[in-house]
Length: 374
Ligand SMILES: *Cc1c(COP(=O)(O)O)cnc(C)c1O
Image 1: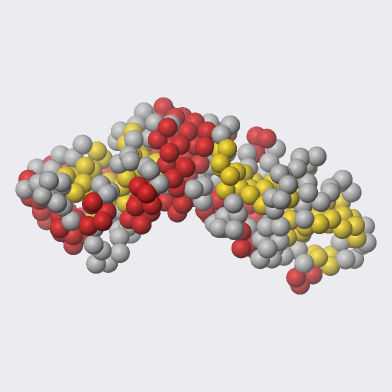
Image 2: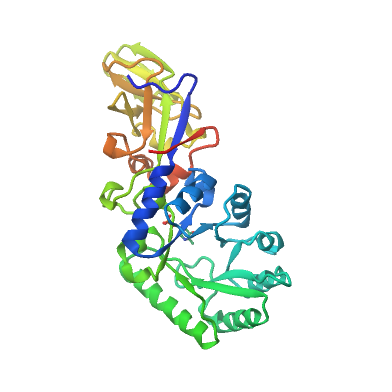
């Protein structure tokens, strides 16, 4: 029987070797520079370790959502280029600039704030974000000329260095993404016409980087792929040559033999229909196990598959293991690498009506992360 180390109730192992291999694979596949996206604590895997592993696998730059995340990476010893692209209204970029954080810029106001954070000897590096259809942030097409001309002026006087033009795709369809690519190319032409020739352009995240080669532009921003998960409904990690980095485990906390007709968990949504064995698993929605997967989420115990029965509670849930030999302390895998027979994060996503991104990202702070390398 597989057992967790004594005293461990629950843990998520994060295989940094998998992250490194996934980045190496995606670099080769896309023949592009990789910006490794480690926002939201590295999609739950740990931002610093994910960034370090991605850089070891050949990523050349790290992407995060906001400056707080970028500064935490610097404090964690990540000295590679880092770009952050979502900013508070009225933001002061001084500290970010002092730590060499590159800024994604979505408006004239942000551009001026970036320039204001430059010091005499150090321009602030910016990536100008173009709105090309997603309707989130980004400079709108009617402002391209005005903002780009101002960026070019600020670059000439040494306050800014424009490193990149970038945008983000909807993945609504290949045609929608191609339309966004055309809108982006229009923006690139406007930038060139006012004298901006940044060395980088980046548009594709994992989905388009794999499926739509014309969007790669020599530089791709990869999030979900570096963690070894597939952004596609119809292809698994293994189909893409990726290895899931996170495995979420618990130790069976109690085992109880019960007769037919026994109600299980709050509301008795499940009642046994025969004499059977119930095993208590010490993870709940506080740990990120989605309550919506009540009565459905998959686990393996000693290599055998079982399903959650009854409601998932804050700290625990129950599986009906039938007559399988299960003991207190046996290891339960909620999700990991399906090629090893473990359930996938995608199966939990399907059981909860969400996407695998959310399943790994929502693993709660009460679950210790243990770094491994395989
Ligand atoms: C999150 C994010 C990414 C990464 O997307 P994946 O689908 O996880 O690869 C890339 N770019 C931006 C702007 C993002 O917000």
